Length: 103
Image 1 (cartoon, helix red, strand yellow):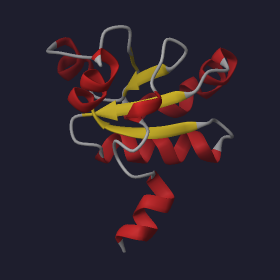
Image 2 (cartoon, rainbow, N blue to C red; image 1 turned 135 degrees about the vertical axis):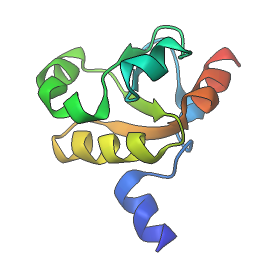
Image 3 (tube, one colour; image 1 turned 90 degrees about the vertical axis):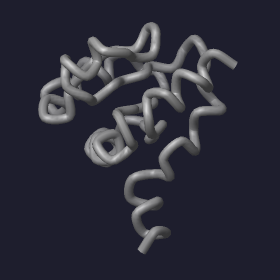
């Protein structure tokens, strides 16, 4: 089951080593959660609105790393973006992504 989930959603945190200045980091938590802490330079697009932003995300033409509190919501968002032809991966927790960005 885990192998299937990893294929569908990407293993949470597996792409954080590749984060660089060109990476678009999207935090899919609620605005309230985002305001209490987030990765510097990340964009807040709550999971329930991600489909409304697909055209904007495609326009950026950058690799996309998604994050949330645990990796569950960012996994769902990753699947939505990939289904729409966007190179996206699940970074997992925003803290994990933040730590990777700082290193």
